[in-house]
Length: 350
Image 1 (cartoon, rainbow, N blue to C red):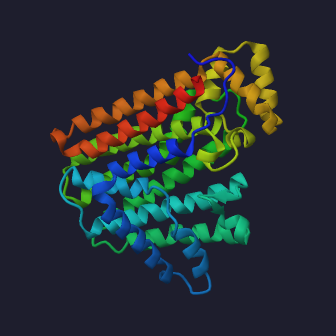
Image 2 (cartoon, rainbow, N blue to C red):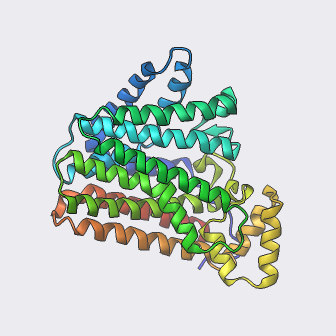
């Protein structure tokens, strides 16, 4: 469904602006909450030793879309209203997420994150790995400030799952007999777990029932998997202007994502060996021929279909809440991701 002459997407500034506007519309009524989370994250800088405060300030300011804090707020609003404890929960989860990014950038030898140098590129990997540990510890310290141990226990368990997922993914690099089941397991652990935690904790602090908490966790898992597949596709089929880094970085590190796994399911033995050779000796000049091979077997089309399947699962999980239009923001989030996914597919076909 897209041609063999697949090319990277050239999304114009106007198209990018449309994306930002769409996201702002979804997050409109939680903007004060997100601003409060950003402000409280900045206040966390003072909780670190003054001599390492510059590292904290560098990491805890200039945030992206704040997806996880958004999920905390939207999950809470599907039950009741947000309160001050939700801000603290969102800060905790965002710090865990930022810690994983610091460590990811070290392992990936990344120089740029969100338009500026990574902590490792700016101060060196030794400082970065240790400060990532400090972020994890500070998040758990803040979680322990709640009157009951449930928040701290949940955050610790989720952090363990995320880090385990990262280890599994690292072990799977250039593992050419990787199964899709193994791939999806890692996605659930390293990305979807924090989405699920955000939804669960938003529900818990709003006084939700165990059934509501379970439904929102299922929503978070499905949304998180869909989001990570989309992000994996973007690394191959997106544009550097939108992605904010060179394309093909996953293949450069030997990470086999869903489009590649779909290719391996259909390709001839000779084509598989050729793809394997390119990944083992990656050079960015291989990207056009890799995209042509993926186009031949409709790898992006099938990946998009799977993203939509997970988004449908997320929507079905919300149906278990039996709360009508109250969950419309969470539903809108699935529509937003579906739109971004389809836009990627349409740009590649054009």
